[in-house]
Amino acid sequence: MPTSHLLKIEDLHHSFGKEEVLKGISFSLDKGETKVIVGPSGTGKSTILNNIIRLVPPKRGKIYLEDVEITSTKKINEIRQQIGFVFQDFGLFNHLTAKGNVMIGLTKVKKMDKKEAEELAMFELDRVGLKDFADSYPSQLSGGQAQRVGIARALAMQPKLILFDEPTSSLDPELTGEVLRVMKSLAEEGMTMLVVTHEMGFARSVADELIFMEGGNIVEQGDPEKLFNNPEHKRTKEFLFQLVDLYGEGEE
Amino acid sequence: MLDIFLNYYPVLFKGLAVTVLITIISCFSGTVFGVFLSLGKIYGNKLVSNLVTAFIAVIRGTPLLVQLFIIYYGLPAYGVNFSPITAAVISFIINSGAYQAEYLRGSIQSVSSGQLKAALSIGMTKWQGIFHIILPQALRRVIPAWTNEFIYMIKYSSLAYVIGAKELMTEAKLIASRNYQFFNVYLVTALIYLVVIIIFVYFFNRFEKKVAIPGFDFER
Ligand SMILES: Nc1ncnc2c1ncn2[C@@H]1O[C@H](COP(=O)(O)OP(=O)(O)OP(=O)(O)O)[C@@H](O)[C@H]1O
Ligand SMILES: [Mg+2]
Image 1 (cartoon, protein in one colour):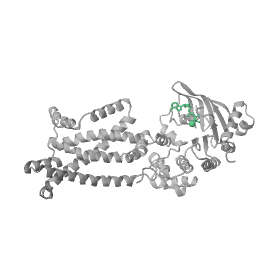
Image 2: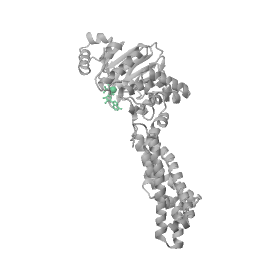
Image 3: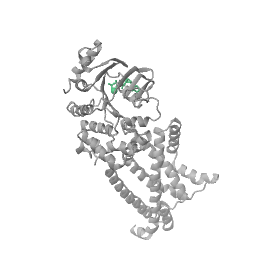
Image 4: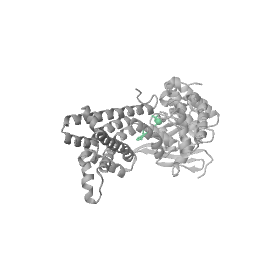
């Protein structure tokens, strides 16, 4: 079924063994939109992202990237090139420099020639403010820098959208800002992003929509300000304010 | 002792060349074989994985000498004949491959699984991820164990003398049985092994440092 959305998720279900983790998730993402997913630990937020690029194949439901149904396509590697993924623990390749991390997908997956790949890698590193760290290895980078390399690596593949799974959760508080600023500027440049995060400051200033999940269901979704100030469900307000208590308002 | 060395060094060095050749071929081919075994064990389907596990158990659970005898004395009954050196090399490759597969399995599993996930996420196939991301790191980490294996192999290659491969021990034994200076001949032989091993270990350690990942591998 063709859709006009960039990404559309329809009645997504997932279970690990007997434990039902996702109980029918539906939402969509248009080009240029940023949506933020929040919810308690163990609610299935990572599972949704992993289902989308089939790092964990979903049990039931359909996911469309533009008009391609990607839950059953055989060409999953081609789909993954079009959907960036930024990991909580960065997932950088430890034996490669920052530049090598960004280049390898270009040379090995896209079969780009080395010089061209190098130019593009430097461009993306510059975009995340790390031109001067191109030759550093992951262990020589701070967490914030490492995560920005992770973002540059995703960007270099020129994806249609990027999924972020708690990109700042393993960072020291003073380093989250530099990563969030990069994400914010991407949003402003029109990148489509689906972000799982506890950073409510980011959600309020960047997200077009906030999705609150609990127990494998979407409880409520909508404009972040509405969810904060005037939610349909009492539980939404409770949770969001609990988050703000725990993690602060964030910047802005 | 010096006179023994001076009198016999051409023969001893000829034997040493065979020893080193057997060891190098066995160790390096053993690495290639070990890579396939460990990949089969970790990433293969159930059948492949179980077959590899069983194979490794059999090879590690039986004496090298028995394996050598089966290949050299046993196989001719089935029409497969090898020269002593070939038989030695084959059995050493098989034996070393099984041990190296286990070392490699450990170092492959010590590379974080998050990196393979990340490789998949940029569109690599599982095997691209294994060859471009996992193996380059796992092979670096296995160098110390590999160096150990090489030392072990250079000494255990002397087992080949029992089937008459003309390696260092065989030559030493021949010399000693002619001049009856067992102590001196074997002492010289031991020293040759020692020096050669020290030289190889020196170069392997340098190589290990050269390929170390900055800030990540243990830097000495
Ligand atoms: N590989 C797995 N095998 C079994 N159970 C799993 C697996 N991955 C996740 N789960 C379970 O599925 C549930 C949802 O996990 P998920 O990681 O999607 O939650 P989350 O919302 O991302 O939580 P968090 O905020 O802690 O990251 C949890 O109960 C978790 O224990
Ligand atoms: Mg999670």
